[in-house]
Image (cartoon, rainbow, N blue to C red; front, side, top):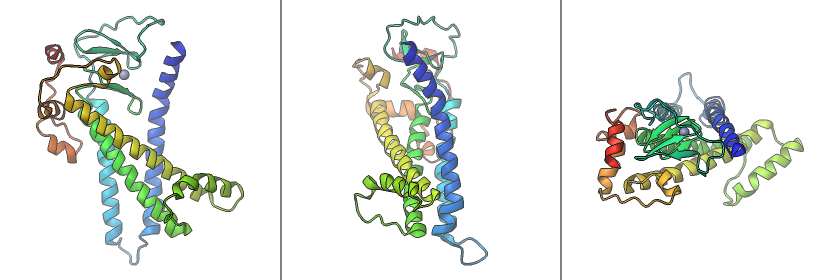
Length: 277
Ligand SMILES: [Zn+2]
């Protein structure tokens, strides 16, 4: 149990560092290599394509990072409970949180009591519950879009700059091992290998975020949480899916689709959680 917690704590520290490193690398590659190479300026002022791609990229990044901040800012911790339950090192609970009464959990990583806890997100280093689920889902959507958009630009960059061909559908299966081999043989540049590596990072994060987002939306629509699923609890939820979605995404959910803004009032408190259970 101790080793498991140590691993989880380590992951809790490494995942945000990985996220910020990948974000910084994406920014640098986009502005220093992709845009100048794919859309070279013919005149003194930037062309229409350069401006369009820059605006799209910045918009996606702004939403991804904005919702990341909102997920951390609007935590789902209980404001009324400051007393932390004592957790034995030999705790029999297999998951990373203690189940308390009324749908509350004590997260062993956050060391806080969380209302309607769904799961602990290692990339934000925070628990996801009813209050920040909407920002987390939007964070997943925009991160996925940013990654897949960067993937397309990365492929275009490798084609334009290094004359690589992506016509073969199996290129992605052999790209990384071949590129690594060629790099150590001194045939290709370090930048080329780095962009190839980033293609896999973007593809992986993009697909994982998209899949995770679909799963979360389905759970929200059913009125369930990931925690309940893990515990094998089948919750009787008679609310229609529209009500469940509105409960999490708020009445101004359309605005939340386009901008990382607060879409519901922060009146959802502990009494609300108690009422539901
Ligand atoms: Zn947590």
